[in-house]
Every structure is written in C-alpha cells, then in structure tokens.
Length: 361
Image (tube, rainbow, N blue to C red):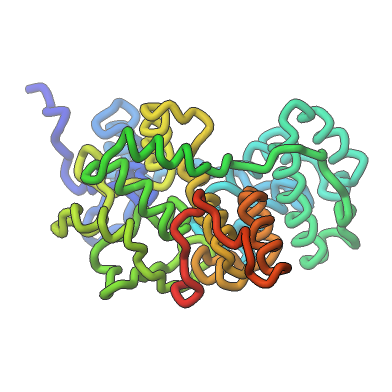
C-alpha cells in the first residue's frame, strides 16, 4: 500500500521554528532526539528515518566555523555580542543584510587586511551607489571598532575615513500641497487616509505606526514605545487625527490591517503606502517622508528642537536639524522679522499649517 505523503511516520515530530523554517525530528521516548532531513517523506527523509528506527547513529553536517582572525570570524563574533544584541530588530535585520553581502565576497580575508587602502578600493567600485557605499563604511567602522575592543587588531584604521559626498537629503519631505492631494484622493474613512494621518500627526516611524491600536489611546493621548530606540512617548492626539480615528472601528488590536486582516509588517506597510501614493500621483512621496513632514510642520509652528524631539523621539539635535531642513523658509523668515519688529507685521501667514502648541509637544 502506498504511504500517505501527508502522514508522519511514528516518532516523527514536525514544527516550524521562530524563523519560519520547518524542523523535523525523530523523537522516540528514552532515546536522544535526532534531526531528520526534509522534506517530510522524501527519499532522504526515509533513509535517515530507517537508520533512526534501527538505532544507527546519524551523522549531521554542520556549517563549518569561520577561520580564526578572518572577516567572517569577526562578523560572527559581532553577531553574538551585546553591541549587536542591543540593537532594535529592524536595525539587526538591516545590519545583517549589509554585512552578509560583504561577508560573502570578503569573509575569507584576514581582518588585518581591512585597511583604509582596501576599503577605499571596495567603496570606489560602488561609486554609482554612493549612499550604499557610505552605509557600508558606517557598518565597517563599527565592525573594526569592535575588533579593536576585542584585541583582534591594534587600531581601527577606518576612524576618520570619509565616504562619498552626496547631495541627497534622504526621503522626500511632503509639502502641504502633496498632503492635500493625498487627502483629496483618499477621504476620511479610508485605510489610506488613516495611515497617512497617523504618521503625519504623530511623527513616528512606520515600524511604530503599524503597532498602534486603541489600547494605546488614553483620553487625548496616544502612548508609543519606539521599536528602534525603546523610547516611551505620550503624544497628544491632534484634532485632525481625532476626526479620522472617530471613523475607525474599535474591534481590532491595531488600527491598520492588511487585506487579510493581519497587522502590517513595517516593510509591507511601506510597500502598501507606495501604491496609495502612486494612486494620488505622488511618485516622489513615501511613508517615511510623512515623519519628516511632521517635523517640518512643528518647526514652522515655532517649536524648539527640544519640543520637536518630544514628539518625534529623536535623540540628537543633528537628527532634528536634518529632519526640519524642509521647514518653509518664507514662513520662518516672516516669523523672524516679526520678532525683530516687535510683532508688527509678518508674524502670521495664510499658508501656515495648523499650529501645534508648545504645551502639546
């Protein structure tokens, strides 16, 4: 009789680990648990299963350890360090993506060979991708600093090394006209309008917005624990956000759900918002640009850097300055000259966004 391909033979245990990988084990009471190769019921599986039933010790292949004092060994050590484990999950993912790509090409080379000359050559081949080159340089500086702290090198050769000069200011900051165009295309009551207003009126990253729900609302405040920094924030709910939330159901754990009724991942939300922006003919706009737009609005409303940081959760003055570079020069110039003239003329503009009071930051 043919064996049912969906059935599990006796003593076989199958489960999916936290990374989504299927694990198969021979787990007979009184005997050590033995891993079996997949897929379940494949020829390789049955060959190993037969040996396990017969009590034959199985030999397992393991990934060879990286040779000592190589770049690969350094990266492995870094992954297991408190320095790496202290990062947010999103940062870990991004760092791994960059370092694993570098490791694949240079992992077998000695650490001492990773000097300025060699890194300059590596970055030079990325001249068509200056932002990516600069990001790699940042990661390598940290990696070599870690190597120095662990006695693997006697100095960090990358300290002070500069990358490419770029004119990019990062994600585009939404203008008031672009915000209005998105609102015209996506009215109150739509998921797109809810998503845009949550980002614009809280100034949070997409990784934080996708986790927001009614359980975080307390009166006129919304509580945020930032995934990247761990910062705890209480943000007053802006009237425009309140108007949108009033049209939002209260029967889900998160405000935003996918078409399958599940919470978004940060990347999934970014891709979904990309399509909503395209529907409004806003090809240069993105979800992250709304966080910058919130900072711009706060700056144009006259908020100090400290007040802006209380909303966005930024930790340094430099970060806030970078985010508020798009603050409307005309609005700020009118305010400045109004102060100089004792408040006579130019202190207000018909194009000012809704002012956020200092007490609400």
